[in-house]
Amino acid sequence: MLINRFLLFSLAVFAVPHVFSAPLTLDECLQRARQNSFALKARERRVDAAHKSYQLERSRALPQISGVLSTEQRLLDPYSFNQTLALARADWALGDLIVKKAQSASFERDAVQSEKEQQELDVVRRTSLLYLGTLYQQKQIEVLQNRLELLRSHRQVAYALWQAGSRTQLDLLQTDSQLSKLQEELASLKANKETLLLELARLLGMQDAEPELAVLPVDSILQKPTPAFAAADLQRTPLLQSLSFRIQAQHIRIRAVTAQQLPRVYFAGGFMTDRDPTGDGSYWQLNAGVQAPLYRFGASRLQRQQASALLSMLEEQRRDLERELAIRVNRILKKLASLKEIHALQQKRLALNKEAFQIAEANYQAGLATNLDYLAAQEQLAEIHISIRKTQLQYVMNLIEYYATTNQLEKLSAL
Image (cartoon, rainbow, N blue to C red; front, side, top):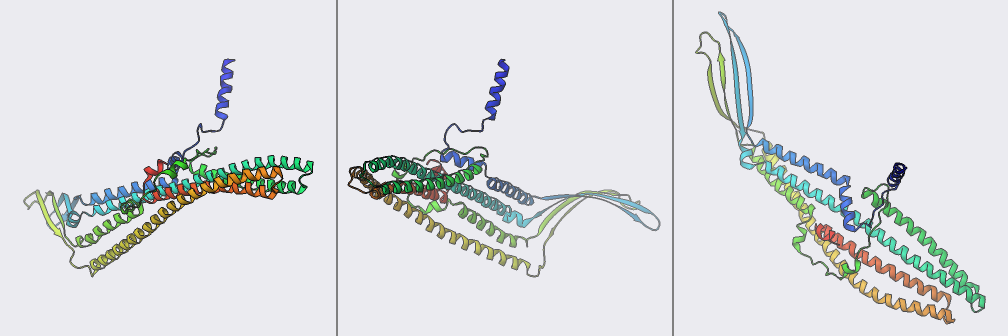
């Protein structure tokens, strides 16, 4: 009997879908999104491939060792004999030793690593946008649900006043119409929230459960000083770093074109087994020499021009990206300052709208205000609540955008 109960309990536990014990914070969502990003994993594989390419280029700067084993049968008129050669050869490309072409592959690997970091920032941006968008939808739902409860209570008051003959049926019809409108808006908001949560759950690798999100401490975030722009912040941008690495790699490729004209040096040694009856017998031999290109019909000049043109293109791209990043960062900082100012003004309007609603509610019951006055005051109060949350989340989103643009993930995770 005890065993049966244990089995039933076990089946019940494993049959329950996965539920999180606590709401997910923004940092937890970002960690899960990075862990479950296929695009990020693909970038990691590309980094591995770039590292192997670097190792391959580095190995080419080492001596290339080869072996030769040959046999030869000489057929002469009076007699024939056999010769066997076993030879080992090592050769170096002087250009690879002087220019160190492997550094080009090293910079290319660093550029690919920077692109992987940029992919990580893209994942952070998308996840943050979904997270904040869901919180905004949730706030709208909460405000409208509270307003719905107030309207239902208001309808009871309006109905009692109508029954008493101090109000007309028009008040009831106006209130019912507003209730119906709110229910439509709630249905739309809930559908939008479900869509955002479904997309977020997919990014977090949660197939069978919808995440519950923790509320961000937006008030404390707004109280902190707005970040100040520093030119050094832009240098941390992965795309800018990637272009810098590729520019350094291209400088090496230009020098490598000249290095190709340097000779290759080789050394060889081996043993010759000579069975010529008239010869001196078997012997050891050592060889040394150089191999240099004589004329390449302008190929080196054209390669150098091509590499220089690519270098100029990369430098122009870097200057353009620096300018665009500076414009973006300054726009974000201006937006942050503006949102802080708007938030302070909205707080004042909230206090006024609260007082106006209380007066409208009291005046309506006293017969000093119309039903439309009450509905308008209630709508204005709900609207300012939603506007304040929208401003708060916009501030956080712009702050996230600033930290993502300047590659300050540690500050972003601390939100």
